[in-house]
Image 1 (cartoon, rainbow, N blue to C red):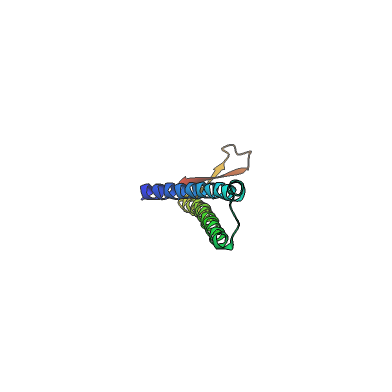
Image 2 (cartoon, rainbow, N blue to C red):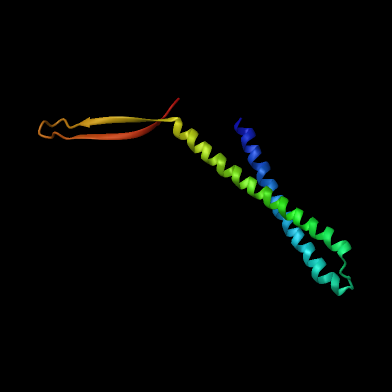
Length: 116
């Protein structure tokens, strides 16, 4: 089961990296369209501009969604794993009494011992 969890983490991380690369590529494409192609005589037209803007917005929306879901899942999994670890530990309380009769002092030590 741990192998599948680890593999799932890597898949999510790779998807997040791919989303980030997609956003960087979309920025580069936007720079090409809005700066360089006008120098080569590109004429603005609503015919190509609206589909282009829609495509860029979809790319960014899906990329951000993928990044947010990946980060959220990693945070959630970390919190769940911490809860499981804390449930698997039981606290042992030991009271130590001084052997000297003049000392009427007791000392309590608490430690966590993993359950088997």
